[in-house]
Length: 196
Image 1: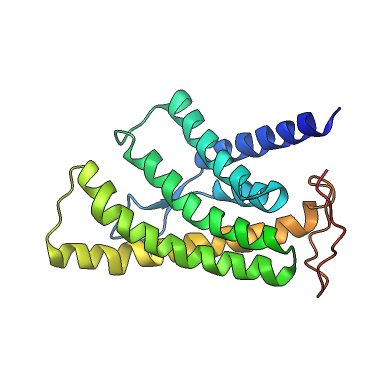
Image 2 (image 1 turned 90 degrees about the vertical axis):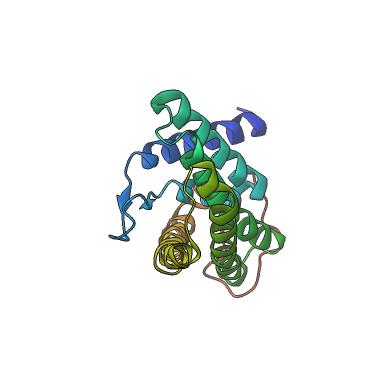
């Protein structure tokens, strides 16, 4: 099996796992029950770490297209758009930082940067795109409550869960799946790490 076919199979597998994980969602903020967390960003972040940030974005895109084809949209595509935008805002910065210099430190820095980006993009996307697209026009006080007590804790919890699970899993699967050393156990980056 050549290198490109092998990579394509692994990307397809990660996308399929992400799709399955989208079915297991749970609310975490009782006063905003429609804000539900799923762990489908974990395979995308694994892909971004293993194959580069654009692969992580591709996995985010594929899983959302697949869920639309299989399940349809219950939110007029707003939920799927939100899932994609919020997922990419975490995956892309984390993948870029980690892939510039693969080490434990850059993985952590990337996930911290991604966690900050998910908050910024989450607020901007909801206020200016997602809420209006869904037909929700909140007054200033209601919007402030939604951002403060809904979006900030929700996206924070999501970023922490996805980052911690990815960190644990990537360290275990980096050699077997991605054929690279995660360098999570070493202080210095191994300059000879090659993705096969």
